[in-house]
Image (cartoon, rainbow, N blue to C red; front, side, top):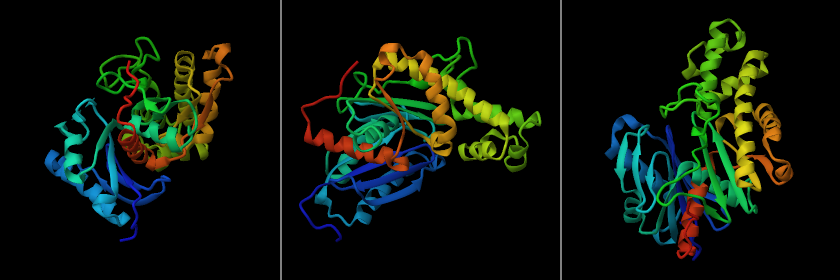
Length: 335
C-alpha cells in the first residue's frame, strides 16, 4: 500500500450529466487517487449506480488505501435532493429516481456520507480550497448548459430546510422572454446559458454571418460547444463575440443585483464556458455588473474565475464530508 499512516483521507464523487469523477484527497487536499467514467444513462439505474460505486472504489484503490484509512465520502449530484435523508429524488439526465445515496455510500464504504447538489459542492470546493479560500461568504455561479448557483456563508452551504436553493438560472432576466426548459419565460438560463448561446450561434451560421463556425462546426447547436465558440471568436467571427457578450450582459446584471441582495465577499465564476473564454467573458460580466451594484457595495466584492476545474465538485464533496464528520453539531444555515 502507498499510504500507511493514521491520517484520514476523504473521498469525493462528482456525478455530472455525462461523466462521474471520484477523487481521494489527503489532509492537505492533495489528490492522491482518482477515477473517471462516463455516466451512460441508457444503461439504466441499477447499472448506473453500480458504475458509481465502482468508480469510488477504484479511486480508493488507486490511492493505495486500506478501507479504515477513509474518513468519509461526499457526493455532488444534479437533480432535486432530499438533503435530510440524503436521497436523490430524481435526475432526468441520468434516468435515476428515489436513490438513497447516503445509505448506499455508507453501506459500501463503512464511513459517514454527505450528499449535496453538484453546484453547491463545486462552490464549497472553491470556497474552501479554491478562488474563494479565506472569504467569509462566497457566491459561485457556473454558466453551462444551465446556470447553477450556490452560496457558502461562514463555512456552510446556504440551503433550504430540506433542499438546495439559489436557482440563479431561473431568476427572471427578461420579462416574457424566451421560454426556458423549466416551462417559465425569460429565465436567465434561457438567454445566457450555453444552449441559448449555441442556438443563437447556429442561427448566425444559417444567415451566413459566422463563416469560421460554419466551416468548422456547421449549424447544429449540439456541435457548438464552449471551446468551439471560443475558437470562432478567436478566428474572427465577430457576430459570435456579440452573442456571447450579450449573454454576459444578462449574467452580469443579474450578478449585480445579487451583490445588493447577498453582499458576497467573493464571486466565483466557473464552468465550461468561463474556462473556454475567460478573457472574453470575465471583463464583459464585470462591466455589466457595475451599473447594477449600489454605491455602498461597489468595493465590497471580488469577481474571480474558478481555479479547481474538473476537481471542484469532487473536492468540495470530500471537504463537505470532512466538515460534517468533524462538526456534527453544526448544521447548514437554513432559509
